[in-house]
Image (cartoon, rainbow, N blue to C red; front, side, top):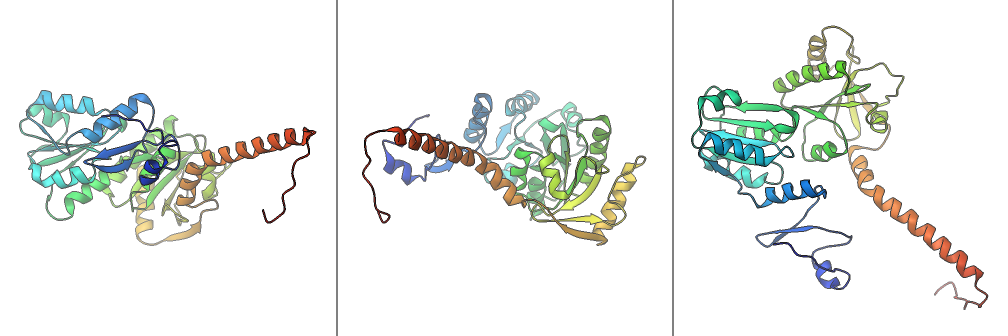
Length: 328
């Protein structure tokens, strides 16, 4: 059911649900209000709403059902497919991470599906990132914290392109970020390095691996004392806030065997051979708040300008205006 409310007219209702700006989209799931903060583009909005009303965990009975489920899920969210996994094992996480991923368990599947999703035995939980063409297999153990750790770490792709959208996703992850700073993250050399980082990420799941190009987001990389004249690519470890670490002797990646250089960088980081530095711009939360508050700043500037125009025209009026004392 879709409804609209004029919260200017029905202000008590708007205040009841904490509505302080327009337009605001609220979802009521079993009577519980949740503010919708996803994309408002028509196609993505529809896909996100379908995600909210879908079952926490879907049950798939055949290859065709699996194929249809993956196609309908689209590319906006990661997909977790359990092959031979008991539904009860992931039901809790299907509800807990409903807003961030699709979950399904398969009752029957062919060997062709095993080849497609690259697993060799069951039970297996496959994490698929359609947008990044990545998938990872988890064979257990399915008890204790191991399963949730895998799900939490797989909500992000193995290598994360850093931009305004993915920064918001990092806000929910407590791991540090191995950040590769490139000249242009779309050129051939950068694409090859990202493949190397993907392999390293698969073996170091306690870290997030991200990359960003100066060409793509110069303002962001400048917080790490990087400019267009810096020698790139560089690697560092960022705590997602105000501090980052450089590994002594591995500040820059040279041409040649970059896989070995990345391995030495990680060895140096884990051995503690690092130099800690402070970001020169806003912290992670500062960056997030600045992204959120820019629209508010524009509105404030517009209001001030409008008041200035109104005061100018009021000054042109020949009718004397009543004076107001300072206290009033």
